[in-house]
Length: 416
Image 1 (tube, rainbow, N blue to C red):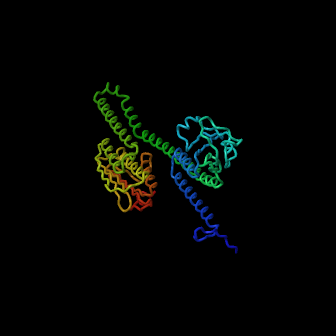
Image 2 (tube, one colour):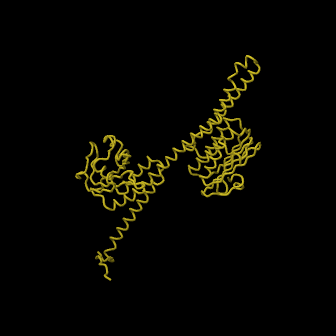
Image 3 (tube, rainbow, N blue to C red):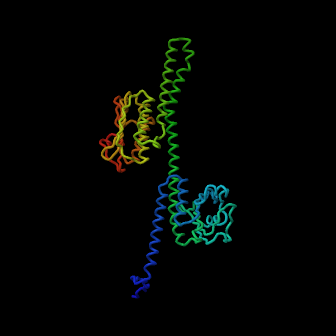
């Protein structure tokens, strides 16, 4: 086998095969670029806002290949660019340039042909459309489609390399790999926003159902009871006065229900406070809007939880207290949140009228389904115990490691 040639070693240093430094250098460059690609992909993968992920994609791809400018053009249904996100250009420059490009020239060529294009100098390319006044000078160019489900949803555009260099085939392959992950991130962000939109629709439907089933029906009943009040007053002032007083009492009760309903819609309060403080604030608001004595016990040693877990726990507390205020007829209630055995334990109970858990399938008990779905989302367990005239107890156990933990009697009591 032929032996590789060696390079002379200056100053008496050991010699080495001439093929090794080149390969090692290329391997090192390749590993660094793949590491940069991995970091860029990780940076966009967890973002769930479409606007944020689009800007992050442009910023990351510009850093990835060392381009001076980068842009992402999102193509609308008629093949025209309807969003154009840039990186490397200031807001003042964007304002001076004016309207966003519509997809003519080289940008339109990539849209129509749906393929990557690499050009040494677009200033001399006959396919260029030209730049508007105040547009920065651009020369080396690389354009790569961003495809999702077999269709192009946009294109990445990169221009100018340091010291007038051009984009290489290695740059093209790297950006194409990044574009594949960028498409996934865009679709994930769009799906997340769609889920959020549907959640808002569901919440509106829930609010409408709650209003119809309680407050609107109560007001309708009061209105019916007072319709014949003038006639009743003419025949029996005593009965008319009693009817009027009953109507006033019903209106006051409805006002209380409205306050409790508003309590149930209180937004999450975790932006500026921790979980314990937020739950304490919610408990104080509950007591301020009801005549129910609430015993609140929140551990002072709660571990740090993710924002999603904290939001779920706060929403569950809000839902549980709101249900007590609106449905239980209780005079006393308790709220407890503690950390034990690697899990958070949330317990809400009351001394109200209670209900048959097995029979509670009507719309007035949809709150239990909401609670159960939140606990499921956190990998926890949920237990409801209640009997007519004996009060209700809700227990949720949320494991800190995200693994479901068994709860005694959960299967027997609430396993349907």
